[in-house]
Image (tube, rainbow, N blue to C red; front, top):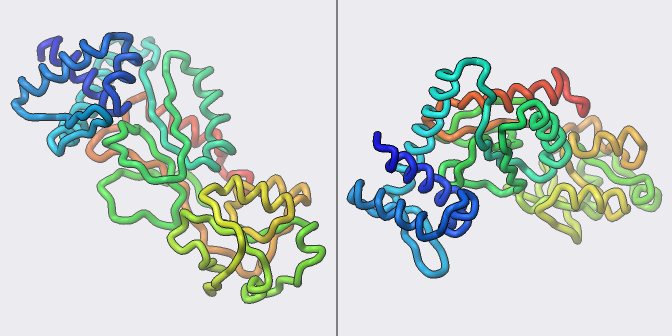
Length: 298
């Protein structure tokens, strides 16, 4: 394969991942004109348009999406081959792109990343903290962490990391002047804070029951709900990994322990049809070790 084509493929990959010719040029320390030249070279060579570009935005064509998926896999394989040729003494290098839910990322992933980078200083981490689903291939994501009770049918590859569950809780200050909670239906008399990204935010599954809750606060951030719970705003159904420390300190009180929500799994997801490069496998093993055989929140 010609060197020019390899260079062009690398540039195309960064344009697709960053969503911008200008950002890709800055990232690669080249000019935007050079980026445009290499993309044009690829499109001429392939005799197809890879990117639709206007003055305001750009997006990949269907052919561009397929080419990106194959390009990522090929470039990863080339990087693996280079490391093997150099021998085991070669230091793993390159960029790993992670997409992680905001609450789980801030409470459990960022600390692990810090220690990982100390062990592997030649690796760069590009961390995206977001509770919204993204297209792993289109965004160039190597690992996505998802917290789900189950995974929908998907071409994505998945590796379960740990299990956990949500927990109903409130602050002692809120409960001091609120009706007692003994069974799920008692929540009808409470201000329940809801997470808007759930499929059914107002339906809480507790034990074998479903209850419809009401409240004056809905948000797409579990971290925001935790802060409001600590300030005594109401009752929340939040991830146990987020509030276990607060419960142990007595800042939050668990409610309805006889009606536990269904457990869920923390998954690591990968783009389809790709072997995980060494750097990705190293990070996964590091995360696995960091979380511990039995996570503290359990």
